Length: 304
Image (cartoon, rainbow, N blue to C red; front, side, top):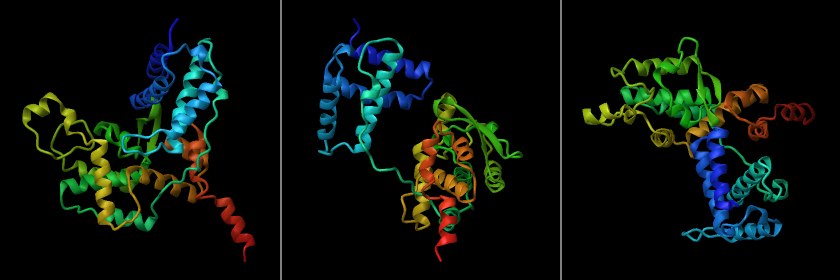
């Protein structure tokens, strides 16, 4: 009779191969489920019951890492979400265990998002020195992040032949390798074009680093010239500091700004969901409390 560890292993294979989810998602599931395995022991999954779950929730609430820090309510919820997904997988495969619906999630504060105003965005863009090829690259990155709402991983993975600068659109594969069409502004297209004019190499990557490599290193792995997600995050942070923006600014802040601007200007939430590549509308609804046009109109009409 397979025990908990084997079922977890089979579930992780199903997530990666059957559901075609990203390796990062698989890693997260593995981390959270291995913590449950460490807590419960390698038991028969039939023995998972509500008492186990209550004791596990107490364990998570009191858990301390090596820095003596407790898990946030949000992180505790992620552990239980992973456990629920695992239990749903067992039920789908007719393996006797606790029903996923019986695992309650902790109440957590509604998520809020940080975004930049138009004035802050322009300060960010103007902070870039366009006299160098790295400056042109950085401005193209900032313009593209804001214009498209791309995730940083999606931007880092772009190739030169992927973007149609004439039509100002292209396809990306987001989370779960799901394809979606991305649109960009003419201004973003212009800066990408200006940056590409400085390129005399044959590397596929749209955005490359200018760190010097030995020729043999590049020949062995052309991908080592591609900017990493960490490098892009550092670029965004650098210009936010130069622009004297006090908010914490990341590539995701520009994605939030993209979505917020669309909703403020009257875009419907379903269209924004599609442009962001969100699987669920509830993920997109985090923006609506910032930009509820209907409530604004009611306030203007009745508050004199």
